[in-house]
Image (cartoon, rainbow, N blue to C red):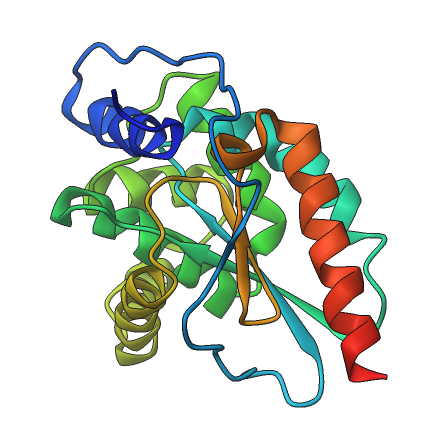
Length: 211
């Protein structure tokens, strides 16, 4: 039987290929989190990093986005929240470039709108041309967005995101990495709310260890 995290990964890929995707009711069948064999250093100075590994094609990520946004508002100043777009296959890479292009253009206010466009409006923002056309409808200059999309900076961040996905052994989205040590997800905890609760517990533990 496939684990919940593997099924989540399948769902993200299936949406890209047009295959019928079954979104299961997630149930806890093992530990609520995993500990990395080797702790990863923070790239945010003295701040503790909380990473959300997500994919725009993932319906669970879309459903959780409002909850994640509310949780982020509660994080203290000594915590850095970092979104990491995941690509489990080459077809998903344009969506990584989409996220980092929005970041480069200081347009991350459109991040939730990407989920809405794909999962509520049925837009297939899975290719460069479709993404650029959609960005233009949001008031972004096509030339500026295209330049960002193809830039060295965005390409480097995409490569780094893929490396981090491998380093943290991410098998499904959404997943949360805490303090470079721990990973949890709805597939591990059983549902969306409990995954955020578990992530907060792990964060509290990491912060306490730093005192």
